[in-house]
Amino acid sequence: MILQAATRGADSELVCASWTDPEVFAELFDRYSAMLYRYVSKRLGPEPAEDLVGETFLVAFSRRKSYDLAYEDARPWLFGILTKLISRHHRKEAARYRALLRAPVDSDIESPADRVAAGVTAQAVRAELAGALAALPAKDRDVLLLIAWGDLTYEEVAQALGIPVGTVRSRLNRGRRKVRAALGDANPMEEE
Image (tube, rainbow, N blue to C red; front, top):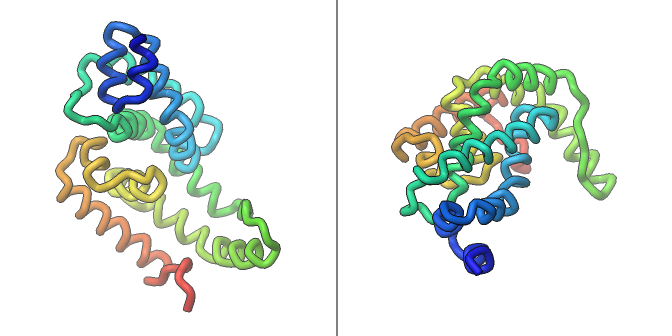
């Protein structure tokens, strides 16, 4: 059966198999929808995340025959589609960062001591971080967040955005410098 064989293979094999058996494409959704949801939820909030993830897979499904099968991993392709969809929501993203400036810190930390330490650190830098992210040019912010929140490599970000790896490195460097400067040239996650 095509579906059983394809679910064990590379993403490119799933895409190829979906050309003749469209239901196979659902495996990509199963593999990556949660990852994409977490990424867009961090950028825009949970409200639009579900819609954008769904729209990402609709676009991917409609374009599956143009997918370059030389790339075994479809994550960069999916993140590229999602990033383009997010760019249409730029004003909402900027508004979310402004709201983060005013919002209390959420906590998923287990011990009370960890909760206090994390809360103090996060609260101390939240406004500056949100402001720095909002102030970044969209192209620099996309690269920074695809690496930080999307867990993509430089090469995967380059593939997702259709830019050279050197451009990824320069945008990431510029974005990190600006964020670091906004935080007073300190990394709050490092102990003194």
